[in-house]
Amino acid sequence: MIPEAQETGQGSPFRHRAFALYWWARFAAVFAVQIVSVAVGWQIYDHTRDAFLLGLVGLVQFLPSLVLVLVTGSVADRYNRRMVMAGCIAVEVLCALALFVLAYEHYFSVGSIFAVLGVLGIARAFISPAVQSLVVNLVPKEDFATAIAWNTSSWQIGTIVGPVAGGLLYGVSPQTAYAAAAAMLCMAVVLTLMIPKPPQKTVDAPASWETLSAGFRYVWNSPIVLGAISLDLFAVLLGGATALMPVFARDILDVGPWGLGLLRAAPGIGAIAMSIYLVNNPIRNHAGVVMFATVALFGAFTMAFGASTIAWVSIAALAALGAADMISVYIRETLVQLATPDAVRGRVNAVNMVFIGASNELGEFRAGTMAALIGAVPAVLFGGAGAIVVAGLWAWWFPQLRRANRLDGR
Image 1 (tube, rainbow, N blue to C red):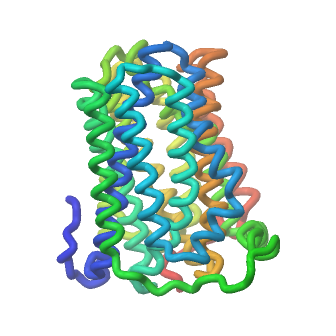
Image 2 (image 1 turned 135 degrees about the vertical axis):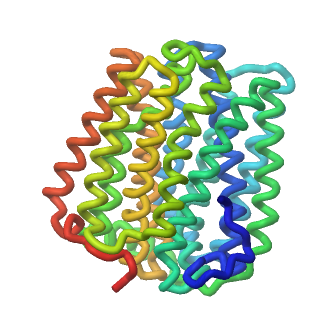
């Protein structure tokens, strides 16, 4: 059930109006980006039948986060994170409108689409550390673990309804999908601007290599933070299969654009079901052990998806994969945010977002490249097995993370 701003139960982050507006704004933005993602993926594969290009879609969107990492985190620490979030979403509106114009003019050009995705990637590079850091400023510490679960759920709910809506809207026409995405992004801008200005410890020191690189130094010197974000990097880098879903939808499962939407939504369905469970039954002990176990399950269910040739089995495997991933994300994000001081949180989150982007976008590039070389099914099976190996290695290499126990800051 999607929460309402009036919710007032003890410990609920939605009793804070600022968080409620933030949650809805993030949901609307994620919803819209998912529509764009499904539409672009189907449009490119439908025109080219080239799985390698699907991998490049992710790479083009990731590279700005890598190139600008020293700048994006500093911006989130120096300036009002709410305004940074609103400005970036406004750029995403322009990107959706550009894709709409290309579709309306019936002009298909891989280069033009990649150029728009590159600008979208720049906006995402700046918005990610601001969004992740802002949530901490909107709720008191005692509500933070629950806020993380709900914050993650906004993304997960968007990944449920967004891909389904994207598939259905693309079935009407590509321009309908892009127009709907632009409208949702406009709504997200308005909601973000309605968030009251939150308290924030900003950086006053002049920009220098010392201040710009503070995030990297903090991550490197904190075994829990380094272990948590690098675990996500390598597990999803190997186990991610999102880029290949158009291949599975068209060539293996034969379910069409609407079925592609269901495949893209399935992990989100499992994740939001798990997030609702976590909100009511938070993890109280042995958080590190639980995290490593669920990363291994993520890999196992990825392999199940890759081996399936039956649509409902594939959807079920993806839902289970999403549920397992939700638990590990919930634990990782809570540990990282609680372990990071607010004054450096934007820069640490910029590093975190590069790791997440590398895992997601480079993971899509890895999947697309391997699929072009050895086929989609072997590429997914290899990736799932790799995620299981990563879980075991990281549990051994980062004992502090394995021994992490509570998520309430105590």
